[in-house]
Image (spheres, one colour):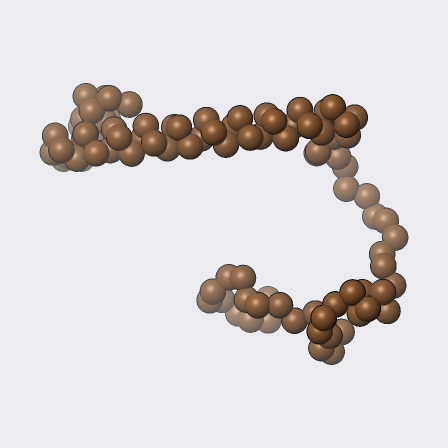
Length: 97
């Protein structure tokens, strides 16, 4: 988006932006568009890879056989009360959910 388009959008949205803010937002949006384009090209590459192998990346989920608990225990470096302890991935929230 050009700075002029940003300014027009801001006016339509009843926002007051300076010329320098419009310039900065225009650059930011251009950077986001470039990032999205690169992500889309990666997505297309991955999709082509799966198609080339004759598999569908979005296959239907099906219930299958699970590994026996003893096999999982043998593969893990730690085991506590039926679980494999791992570091917290998300901060906050209830630790039990």
